[in-house]
Length: 86
Image 1 (cartoon, helix red, strand yellow):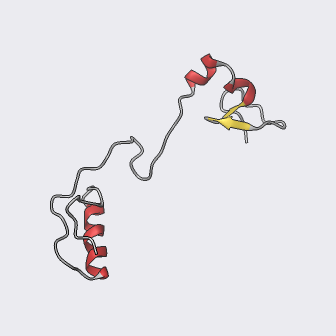
Image 2 (cartoon, rainbow, N blue to C red):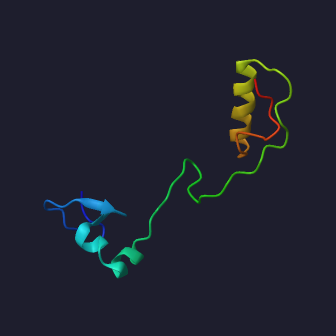
């Protein structure tokens, strides 16, 4: 691996943010290379909107999987606070 700032790759350890230890210790360099936090498909770290309707009553595993797949396709969160719990 190479440091993203100095491109040094000879026997270095990449610490965080893709920086070698020497570059990471410098606050000015560290500030230029902000941490990139990724959480699944939502890379801008926002919570998806709550589903419009909860899962009501007992449903089979196949039906539940179909409902959850529909929520993902619409860009909604997977869980509604009022979803039926087994």
